[in-house]
Image (cartoon, rainbow, N blue to C red; front, side, top):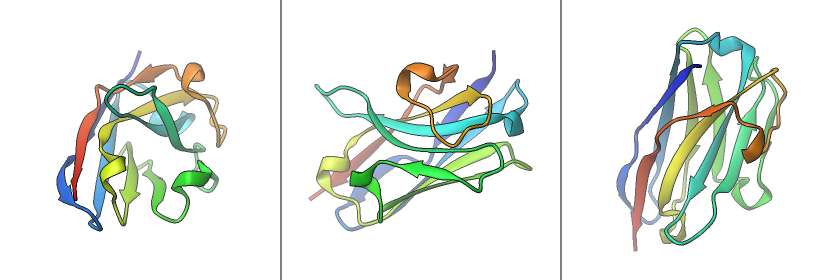
Length: 124
């Protein structure tokens, strides 16, 4: 089983931006779809976006469109989540996940493995 490690989280003021990274190892990164999810305190894990193996197709939750963008660099075995115009309600632990097969969409329960998450805190 592969490993995923998120980075790039932190404390940011409302209206600010962050770019999260998810480094993959121990598996053929280019053969997997990648996704980002988040979980706020006391809430269920929430889908953000997924991307296919080549990076040319994405699926983003409607509530995230326009502010969050998923991308990947297969040469670096890394997926990214660019987050703009952050709001206090975006405060959560952000997780990346991988799913074999390469499609542009997968849900939470289809993921093959997960990273440990990175905390994002948005202050008002």
